[in-house]
Length: 180
Image 1 (cartoon, rainbow, N blue to C red):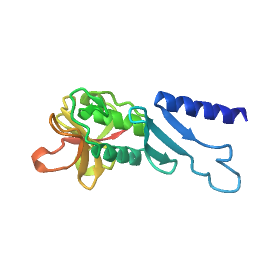
Image 2 (cartoon, rainbow, N blue to C red):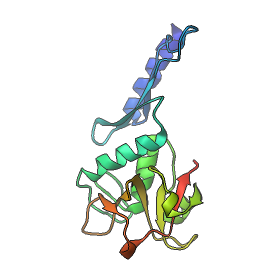
Image 3 (cartoon, rainbow, N blue to C red):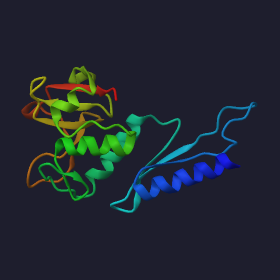
């Protein structure tokens, strides 16, 4: 009973502070069957609503892609140095999404974010991976790959966070799987 009260207290505190709220019960596991699915809800204090709900069977990459797509539909303007729903730049977008959807802080600078990935070819990118433009150690743009040759980006001043398609005119230099 004390454990249940602690969980509830932690959930309320997390919701108030804009953190992660995890819902589970003492019955989550039993000896007879597979574990029941617990859900995790990521709370956005700026909007006052949940941004992504992920059950334990869903990967962090799926949560990252889901949140990135949601942000692309919210008319969030490009703001240099921004990392909020009022405005984001490219590395602010990727850091925001990974913090909210996966609990991973990437830092707010493309080169810093490079240190949180295992590098791979763009052709090997999987949904949730980061795409980088520029040479290793000197990247100048980053976005979140969402599959089907598309990515979510905060492109440039005067534009909103949106979904774009990989093309030869603005080809990413490399991709990276986030390691934490």
